[in-house]
Amino acid sequence: MNLFSENLDLTTTHIEGDQVHHFRNVLRGKVTDKVKLFDGKGNLAQGVVEKASKRELVVRVENKESVAGFASMEQLTIGIPKKEYLESILRTATQTGVRTVNLVQTQYSPWVFKKYARLDKILISSLLQSENPFLPELRLFDSIESFLQLGHKTLLFSTELQEAIDIQQVEGKFENIFIGPEGGFHQRELEIFNSSDHITSVRLSAPIMKAETAASYCLGLASLLK
Image 1 (cartoon, helix red, strand yellow):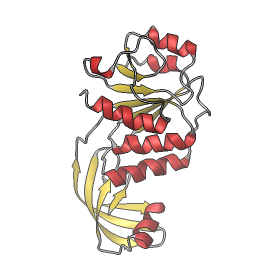
Image 2: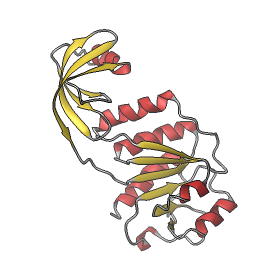
Image 3: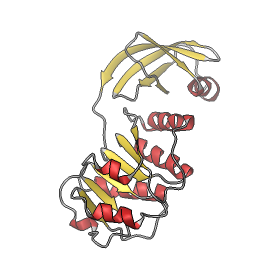
Image 4: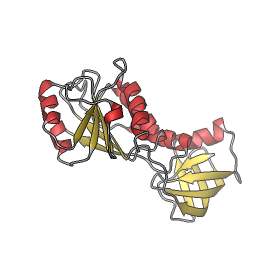
C-alpha cells in the first residue's frame, strides 16, 4: 500500500485521517504490513506498520531515497473553471507529473477561487494512485497580467486568437501551457496575449471541449513537443 507523510526524516512517522480508514477498513491492513511512503517532495521510503489504531498509523521509516520524477510539463496554467472541473484537472495534473498549477482569475471564471480542504485530499490521493513523487504546487493569480509578469515561455491553447498557429508549426521547448475557462477569454485578455512576446498561441483542430477534457488533451499534445 502507498501512504503519504509530510515528513520522512524521522525514524517513525505518524499518519492520521482518511489514510487510516483506507488501510484498516478497505485494505484490511494490519501491524507488520510493509508500505511505500511518499512525502510529495521527491522523497520515497519503505515502511513497516508498527501500530494501527482507529485514529493513527505509526510506521517505521526505512530505505529513504530521493528521486527525480517525471514531468509531462513543468507548469499548467488554467483560467479558473467550474469547481468540479478544477478537481478533475488537478487529478490529471498530478497523475501526469505537472510540477506547478497556476490558477488564474479571468474575466469569465465562474467563481472566485479559495483553497478548500478537499483539494488537498484530491492531490494526495492522486499522488498515491499514480506513485508520482511530487505534489503539484498551487499558485493563485488575480489576473492574466499578474501571471504574465513571471515571463514563462508559454503555449496558449485557444480557439479565439486569430494569430494562433497549428500545433505542427510549434518550435522550441515550453515550460508552461495555458488553458482558458469554459467561457473563453474576454477581448481585453486576448489583446494582452497578443502583445506578449513570450506567449505562443496554438489553435486546436478539435471541437470545443470542457476544461477538464482540454487539460488532458493539451498536456498530451505538449508532451509530444519535448
